[in-house]
Image (tube, rainbow, N blue to C red; front, top):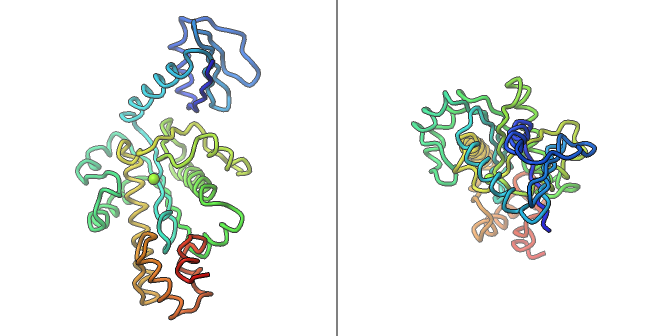
Length: 288
Ligand code: MG
């Protein structure tokens, strides 16, 4: 027997019940919306948004539903999506953006060729992001290196990302006076771990759809990724200006060389102002 759990929004849970209407309804367990039984699977939808498929057919049925949901969500407006930038860069901040896109924005997004920010040149991002920021309700969070290093003393990178995404959505919810049913995160962690990292947060946005490579499938995630990348580039350029220093991006060999130069010029104690110091680059470059 196999078991598969997926997280669904309230609307998805209702839609699933409609599809199950022809099967056998069972006694509703505690904290559940409903429980149905097909010939080879028991399906329980909990109030937490978790839907558990149990039985021989669990994997096939849940993946059918997941795929169906995916294709439905792709065309469903309004939708909110979020993405983060800077997590692979030794220098510079971490930026998370959540953006809201409606059907009416679709044409503009196509016109501006909004897609995964990794597939776009910096120049293109710099030319289109201001228009997106003007048009789309969004929440943009920038965690500068000093703050990142402080938070990282107690939280790992994944926990930090979870909290930033959640914070971006709670902020967007306030700003836009509500969130749509379709909320998508470019997946960087399992839904289970995501919600576990948020257990102590005062407000947690639930019913999120997690999918890898979402920035190339969902307009809202693509727009969020472009805005986040733009904010990252802007604060990166400002940092270069402020220190009159050419910081390289990424976490490769040129970064190691830059660490040595930076420390020579400014002192090791100032590295935390510009870099995520826990990266292996620090030790490697300074031969600690
Ligand atoms: Mg991403």
